[in-house]
Image 1: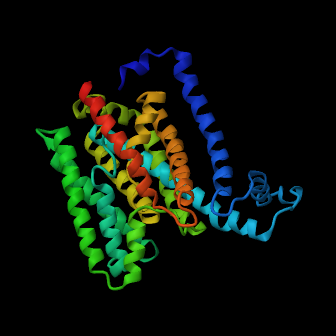
Image 2 (image 1 turned 90 degrees about the vertical axis):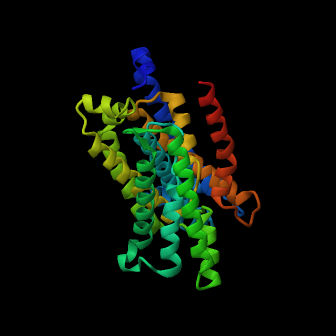
Image 3 (image 1 turned 60 degrees about the horizontal axis):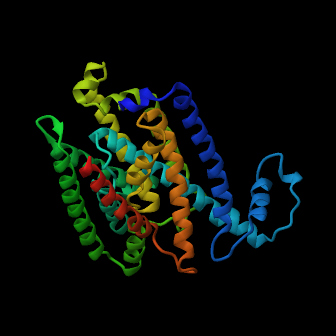
Length: 355
């Protein structure tokens, strides 16, 4: 555990994270209202608020209707599911980053950098274009992405261990190498696509996008997020201990093997389900946990919820930018996060090198 956490005054230690979480909760509500109204066809925030309130039980009769059916269709049918999906995707990617960083004990770990996103994309693309996993039913895309993510995490984790410890150089090189291999497999799959439409859809999906979000897309990612977040928060002390090393965590009474297996499964599930609904959105899992630790320290009891809020807000506003920059056309979110995240990663490397 970080020593500076224990040195903070008790009032600051307890109050500051609560205030930050409360502020982020309010900012998330404001983000939802504002982001829903923004797009090629804009809707005022006041109108957006009234439409949303009219959908709430016991409040529908209290709201005076003064909007058009078009406004309601845009807000409720198109943009609200998209914004909510953005919140879930951003939170899931951020928590995945926190999970991987606890697993490998390094703040440079990220689903994108370690090749996890590439693994999930490869198996998901295989399922999308060729129906390889269609026998899995309704959730075939999510399960196929989960399998690819789990495979890459296990391989990278195994390759990065030297004499029973995680080697940082091995970790980054293994992640890059496995990621490139999976990207090559993905390109081979897309080049063999049976039709041009499927190829176009798969290519746009792989770049990361929330376009086409529907209400039914929210259930599985939200359920996975709630379950994984609950498990991680229950085990936050074990995550803190793991940062000190496997031996230290074992000495404190934690079963390291079970803990590591749990983190692999959680990271794979979150990455797989998220990528299945949004494609590959890189660097969110790198940037957000790092910013979070600057705000609240390294205690996972605080890092996990704050990262979830920040990640959701970041993805929603990135999505707003993606649909406004070249409106009425859209940019893939993954393109924008890579433009922001690339320099951020370089800065982190330089910062770590100076330390």
